[in-house]
Length: 267
Ligand code: MN
Image (cartoon, rainbow, N blue to C red; front, side):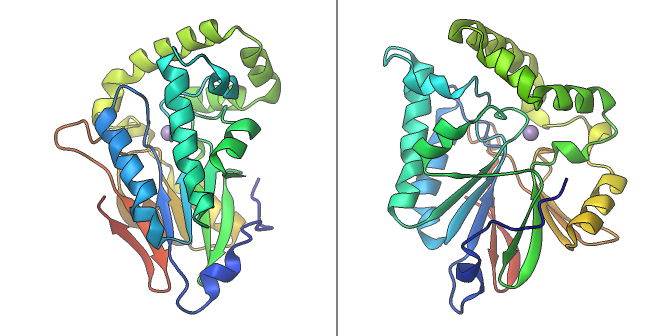
């Protein structure tokens, strides 16, 4: 399902002369376990973002999000303190007149209304079309395009099912934390190299269909952790880098969109 009725209400900002650019990031996989990546995010929000009209986070901002009620956790719980610290940080964007849009990833699809309110963010459906500087651009996290991985697509449908989500959220916080911890340690090895197994990159077919259905010829997505610019049959596909400042060599970066087009930039 493509949302073609754009609710990107800062469109005027993106079409006016001398308009400020839009910044796109994703796959930061933030947790209290990677302090250098957290520090880079703080610098990005507090300093880098001041040049932007709006910041778009295209999924997997957090390594895992077990439910918005973590925001009410005790101060003695480092995960609760961390969640509050990050939402407060993001809220400073709206206080400076900078827009913040957040799309769910496959790790943080439980980010809910409370999180969006506390972070001063507007949620984006996946996929979503924006018009910026007179150009239509389709945004996606990217996992929905990895259609060759049938087992994952089955899990994705289940995980995004509202009833399944309600059942999970009804579990005690500690049980959910335990499940999240297990999912995290399982993926630890995979996270070091790439986000997705090579044979499960996005498929040509899914990308072509997205260009046609969204009536765009520019796509920005993340998820695969393979930053690149691909010239596809029906358009140009930009892949966001993941962030891992605690790795050697460190990784990270963002895409800037202005009247001159799309440009990848280092942190
Ligand atoms: Mn992902």
